[in-house]
Length: 502
Image 1: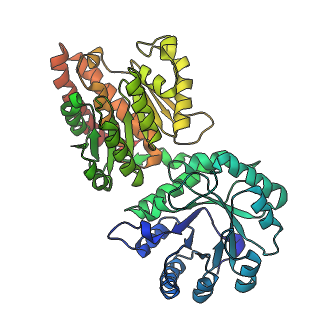
Image 2: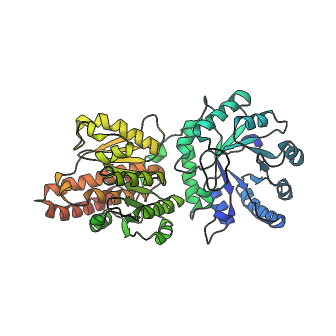
Image 3: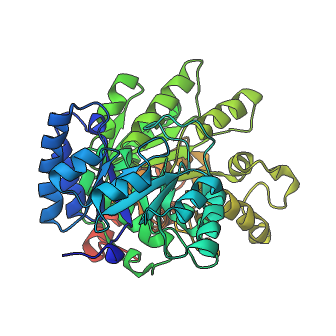
């Protein structure tokens, strides 16, 4: 028997049956999520008749009881009482919380949605003995019609301040537009003087996914990191597994070379710009997208956006390579549209490209032609700020490659400098573009939270292969073949000697 004071709100799953992928059921999704870390479940149904709602609630309750997790019914007090659910959640336009409490008794959980300080104070002063508040929406969301502007982390922090000053024992969860990409940063940004929200309510990023169990694990890890838990579990990650699939939408002059490099690095390449295929591709268990905008056409932006939407919807990694994004006004506009279209796991480019993405005039910096040591101190803060703003890994290529982690919230972003390579790498077409495929193969083979380690591993492999190939090559022709061979042999040796990222 659980106590209300001991309830874990950290991963609060809200169900929407309409989001469940074809071939799965709401019961499948709930059970997989509970098996992998969800701590409380809210059943939300707006269209079912009462009888059907009761049947569904009973079946869901059987599942939640098996895992010792509370079931909360959204809005419908009658349903909650009919199935003896552990609690009820009501919105601002639903039944008065005082009446709800009278009906369900003091032993049941009562939650109320709040969107502003005024609503929160009503909860705090209510005689209804409200157990927790749902604060949101934090970000824009497609799962609910929202009439108010999103709170953002700053708005959540203001509400937590109100709780801290008036009723610090009141529990809270945040909801709206939250997923594994932004949860850690949101939690790390919204705490007020040591008081943080007690959990994160998630909907589509679990209910709408083909592998609800895996996504729940990733959500749980994001929550853990957001609360500042140790990173130790992230430092060693097994990557000895089946080859990841890499979907290329890439520079037309680099496709052949990129595909061969991807295979040598352990990936399985697919070349496709047919938007009708993107949704199916994105559902492949281990797949990453390389989005290289080096040869855009008038129809390209639609293809780019369709791919981003498909891969974001399945929470799969995207490696964005904004080739020559600052060369013309048209390319800059494409870059802006791509960046605003979704979330990226890695953004890769040379100095000029990364400076353009960051909105910085790279021509005014020392060491513009290559990332020399004299310029690194200037460059790293720019990349670090960009990584933090975009909540992704940034790779800036040059004589020394710079990899910066913007995924894991830390006081100072993690930075790795990778040396190696050979000048001949700049004398062959597609060497920069092909790196994106190697990064994708590594990132898609591990957890989202280990994307930084995976990227460092990929970049290091690439640099080392270039260095060794350069030592035995006479020119660009022999280098191309030698580079492919060295990359393949190094990958094979690495897999035999060390299957871990460290």
